[in-house]
Image 1 (cartoon, rainbow, N blue to C red):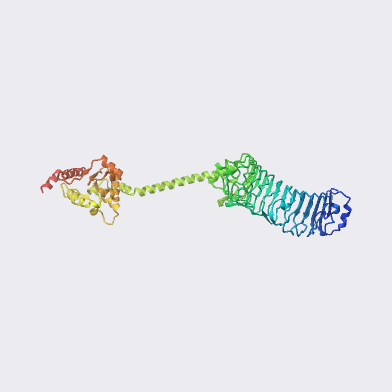
Image 2 (cartoon, rainbow, N blue to C red):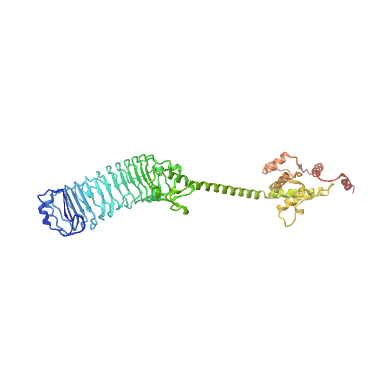
Length: 579
């Protein structure tokens, strides 16, 4: 008989009782697979139950109330034993020398794993039992050195106390949805050089130790979804995994990936980076993957990627999943949005890639974005920026040259009228004694008399100083006398008046500036006012000398300069001298 089922075949209901004498008739029958399933009342004493089943290859016990298993006969030559949902209250301690495969799953009554002794065992499935392992995993725990398949998934706490000594032949190892302790404290898998499949998904592992996967030189599939990394950053922890082809890093809270993270994985074909917190599509980490064909970055927070980054996609990539990300459909990313349109064949479910920003385009497919909108926006922005810049420039120029503009307006207003003063005197207040006692006395009381504009005497009260300088000083004067001294150069008002005088001289065709150097000024100090220094170097100026001959020459030359353009007659001068 190839396969014999005793009990409920369709797993739809439980049979009420089991008569163990039913098995006595099977002693002379050769059976390959024997299954007992779904009995409510089943003898806990199974020592003699299977005497006639000693030569069966595969035994399956499903949904039986065994609770406390007794010892089995030692003459059993079973190769595979399956015990599923049998309501065990303690882990069975059977010694079956011929057993190669043992499946013990969904037995929720067992809480603690105890040591086994099954020396021929190659396949062990202890999943979905809520078992706790105080020490895992080594030869002393499992009682075999031939184990190739070990499934400890969906259990309770598993404490990693050794690095699988004596279990070097393992090819398949599954810890998913169990809680691993000390799994990232040392190189747990160092001796598993033959391991091809490893699943540590959702094991509450935080990867801190970078050598966690050292020694896994034959590994082809690594699943570690639902765990976490220090600082939510993926470093290069895969340096020994040169044969890896599938890598699952989904739901690991990753925010960044090292550019060298995948640098030693030449055979990697699939990477699952979905359900993380990646903010951008950084392709540089994937550039050294010549065999990569499938990349899943869905359910992240990717906004866009730059053109420079997109150039680093592996050439063999045939499937890229970017759905359910936070794409920003703005003109800043129009090159990326155009790239999406141009690579529809590469992108998975490209029609489901939608905008999340701005709000007015939320849930709009990326394929609906139009670059023409950006061209219009660029034109509007360019014109707006240019207008703002021009207005700002005009405002700055008006602010800086406000007094010069006032001077220009005044020149047009007073250009045809006669001047009230012969000269406007620009001087430092600290040189006022010389102005009053020498300049005013000799010019206003001399022959011919000259009328000077002096700020302490002629400026209108209540009017701003700057306005008085322009309206009373420059607009109503034929000439400007600049009294240069050490104090003049250090006075901000004097320099301001001098700069306005330059503009006045440029705007008024009849204007002229007469420089009087009252005292010797150090050249180093004079050079601080570059333009004044140049004018004094290029133009003739009067220099005050307090001597009889010097004073005579000074006043004769100054009067001659002031007479230029002044309406007067020699007869009037002679009469004034006679009187």
